[in-house]
Image (cartoon, rainbow over all chains, first blue to last red; front, side, top):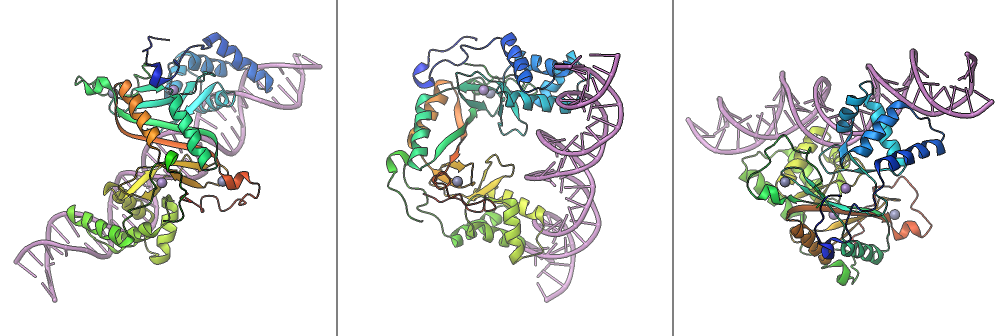
Length: 180
Length: 180
DNA sequence: GCTATGTTGATAATGATTCTCATTTTCGTA
DNA sequence: TACGAAAATGAGAATCATTATCAACATAGC
Ligand SMILES: [Mn+2]
Ligand SMILES: [Mn+2]
Ligand SMILES: [Zn+2]
Ligand SMILES: [Zn+2]
């Protein structure tokens, strides 16, 4: 979406191409509801719209607050329920970055990716690396396992944080996913 | 410790060599207490002994139950406190395998390792792979990060579970770490 | 319009972990 | 060996994220 570094050798193919538009995602959601004989409601629509429009890796708390601004009546439980629904429909992916709360991101079908997380400022950078994936397969195969999924997160300090002028506190997990 | 496959190419050097004995670990613990001006108590000793003697990847709940058998007066909070202490002393490593509760394992200084987890029976197999570690470093470096730690878990189905005769339920996370 | 059925919001419940605090232990020192 | 400051303990309350409950309320097909 934003600028991309030409680091394809180590990084694998660019992340973020071939994304569905917000509108496409929204109608995919409506279709999924229909298929499952679930009902369309204003709160589901609002929550989904905010989710599709949003930056990546949003927590339920954050999503709840944003939805409140467009539809103040929505309850916490409904946000939880809808986010679970989005996950079940394959439109949202749930992540757990060891900061207690779950985070959700839009699913781009084509590209699996993993994460690099700055322990100082909370920034999250995505990456995909074919070599790592291949080695994982090899290891699993050697041990007789068939992989269903995997999780890999690298924690460290991002370049901005290392360069001295730290983005102070407060804006911790607000800033998110520079999508380098 | 047990039999080891000669899969060093993909797997890296064998895990589990150069382990300290239980007694060595225990006295390292006592030393750590002294260094920090913490007091030696019977409950700390009992909890630590059980932990050092135990199989890998034990949950606080499990540890609590085992400690109860040797010292029924020990409270839940003390087990939590002691396990945290062991972690701070570098004698225990905390893991989170997406089954809600934290698990702790003895730290073998020489060998970092990652995990393969069977989603069917809960079996946990350890592995170390130099190639993966190297690629992680490369990816992080390319993105300007300095790695502090990382987490990688592969989930799948183990050979036993695939071979039909499933170790029924119930023994879920009892069986643990075949240390292939 | 009229229901059957799914949905909602408030709130209680849950499960893992941490905190509180009154009581008890430990251990260096007299 | 006895003291007493400092630390540790156990029971239960508190916390935090998430899920369950349930009465009141929309939705959608007829
Ligand atoms: Mn992501
Ligand atoms: Mn392990
Ligand atoms: Zn940072
Ligand atoms: Zn299995």
